[in-house]
Image 1 (tube, rainbow, N blue to C red):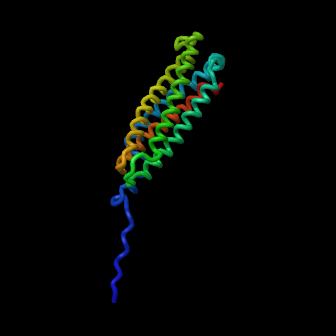
Image 2 (spheres, one colour):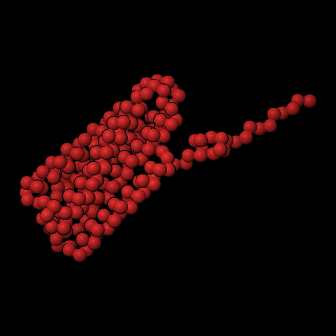
Image 3 (tube, rainbow, N blue to C red):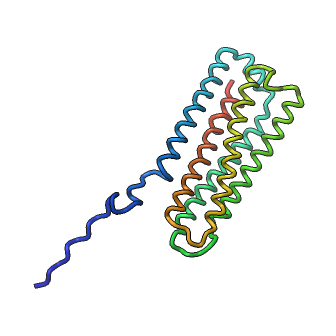
Length: 208
């Protein structure tokens, strides 16, 4: 009489790290992201309060902004986030393949191009506003505009450094699951930068 082997136990979080990790990246980056977004939520609240207390000032000052440049920057960041998402997927597929390159480095590179376009447009916008005499000291609206968009721009420049590192990391022929975790951490940060602008754009450029 043959003896059947007992069925293999189903993988559990204790035996399969992929099951144990339910969120992209690691918990630490999400603590940072949530904390950063909480700070920006306070900023957003300040903009809403300003628009409610001084609607005429808000409307008149907002009229001096270039909505087209803001919209183009929004499209650039949305496009970059899509590219980064595909790059993360390509990086995961590369694990164990033992081949260098793949699509991930190119996707990260194009995301960097989009980010560079954002920086250039924002620099042109700042220059035009300052040349026209709209400085942080003009009124409360422009003080908020320069402070909050400046803080976001700093986040974006840091994100560009992160994308550069991810582009180099994804070129490795021996990409590991741990490497993809770092890719997910960097991608999560970049998506946060995108999300913050998605909130800033309508608050500063569209809401009246």
